[in-house]
Image (tube, rainbow, N blue to C red; front, side, top):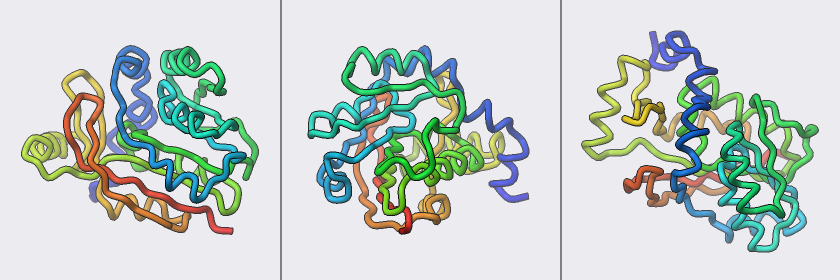
Length: 227
């Protein structure tokens, strides 16, 4: 049995991918620090673009876009607590709580989509595929998908966690944090497979700080929906 099929068959991917109780209680207190590369965003998206942030959390990334002059912004998140915090911080931006991966927008109705520190919170292949497929649906042809997330790390602390939980989840890179949430770090080959319906236009390696304050190697992937 492959690592991928083992994870899909041995877990309830819907429950594992949502972990809603954790994000409602702990999420609003966490610090999310993946940098927004506004230079790259403005290269592909004009100021009148419609941009969604799937898994927007408390709205930090959209807040930065608003400061840069973007106005047609929509944040989506499963966590009511996160959406409440986002609305308090950025009342000028539209934020909506969603109950499923289904985005309440028509086909090809947005120009850009952000997916910041979301894949790490969605441990299963099926869950990640469902999100990317839905973003592909709502993006117009030529629209931009901007992903920021974590690579597999090469330090001893992380590699010990990967090895510890590999038999539990059937996949190297999926592991439990002490506070009761399961996360995933990513193999570059998987990201390439996950985004295969898009045309990659840039891939940047960046150093970030995780939500628990640890340094980590991350990536920022930019792709266009084929015209």
